[in-house]
Image (cartoon, rainbow, N blue to C red; front, top):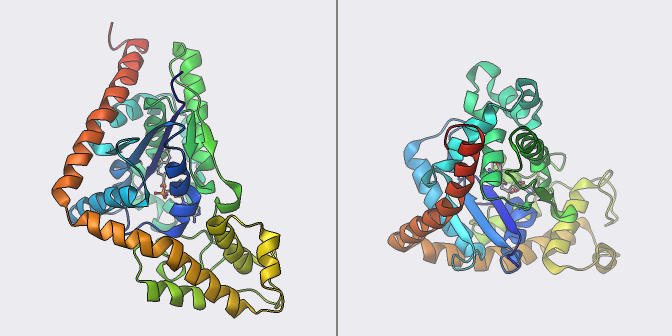
Length: 331
Ligand code: TYM
């Protein structure tokens, strides 16, 4: 029997991935490689939906590809590729956009949030149709499972609706995918503002995987914590402390209650230092070293990128051919 398929993507919109990406998604990507047929993409088409600089984008795409390898994505097991190098993504996105309701797309909260920040007038149509392109990414590879963080749940719902709609209008074509979201680490919070998810747009509250270890320790030391003194997992009343406990749990796999009991009679400061050191030791140090060494051989990275695109295109072309026949573009 063939293995179930997986697809997921990450945007090349920062110089470095962060620990939210790692715990929320990338760790699962790595773990699924043996049990699944995996397709992982650096989604550069998505990265131009907001303001961008072509030279920086190119650099970040390469750096993102290197970082995927550094976290443990193995090109001999998984297909790792850059989205713009596989033309079927944009082609399928167009067809899907023609079965997407305007109202349906308007309800996407990520679009609402992002367009509010920049103003509706200045937001691109690409930002509006962003989730349709994401659906195309997933459906081209007939992915059963999509490992992502909590913030992608609504986009996955739209993908499922579009797959089911296309299937019912034109006949069975797509697998209807399931999101794969690991509850405990689905939303790592900003260290300076535990009401918000960790994101590159708030660099002081964000631990980048390529941050210098001293910077990481400092960001943890100055993390905003909650009122009270007790170290207890209570996301509603102690979001900052709970976030640190979730990070420890994600690294060590220990039960939260066991972690709490190690900190009886200890203070918030102890927890912050402990978490920072653990992250540096288990995540940052091994990752930085690998990424920096991979980035030293650009031609090897480009070669792997080309090979990934060729592998991805074989699968994507088959699905697109089926879609083109179903909608009447082809016999
Ligand atoms: P992106 O590039 O913003 O993030 C990549 C992955 O990291 C997860 N993530 C988090 N998880 C937990 N806590 C956080 N603070 C945190 N921040 C980010 C995201 O949920 C995501 O899984 N739209 C997608 C990219 C995309 C995609 C796809 C994903 C394009 N096509 C197809 C899956 C399938 C995005 O912007 O992710």
